Length: 164
Ligand code: PNS
Image (tube, rainbow, N blue to C red; front, side, top):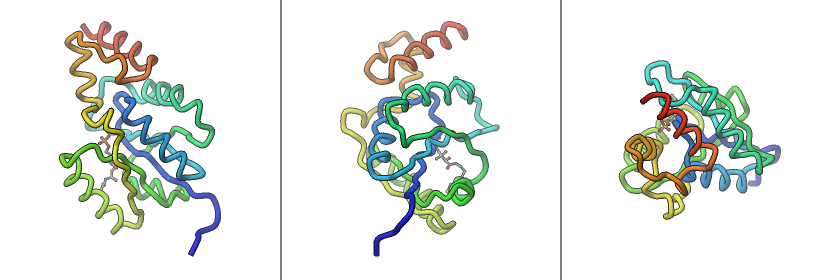
């Protein structure tokens, strides 16, 4: 039976920083859902390269072309964030088999807790891409152009210069 009303999904993550791989998933979520929230995890145990404010600013800039995507933060359980915001689906990208075990475990647990997860196969152009690998390449002076949007590229250079 078709469901009525606004269909909302969330794309959760750390996004430290956001990459073209993430943006591809956000765009595909925005095609399937009326409203998409990119929700950045506030993780008090894991300090990232970028502050929460910087991550949000970068993502907000990148999703400007998509009127149905908003950016927010969350802490605690993702399912609680979903329930509190009328979100019925978690939308994620699967890059490779190596993602599968962890993602399946989280999806099954989140389903048990009341919110289902939908996966899209990542665009093969970005299947090797992760925030960690981008940071590592940038840290050692490698070229990350084409892997992250220009604003993220600039922020990476500035952040790594400031830390060196
Ligand atoms: O980009 P990441 O770090 O791989 O994203 C992981 C994230 C944020 C999706 C996941 O850690 C998460 O949902 N954390 C919130 C806490 C939670 O709900 N944990 C139970 C998962 S079954």
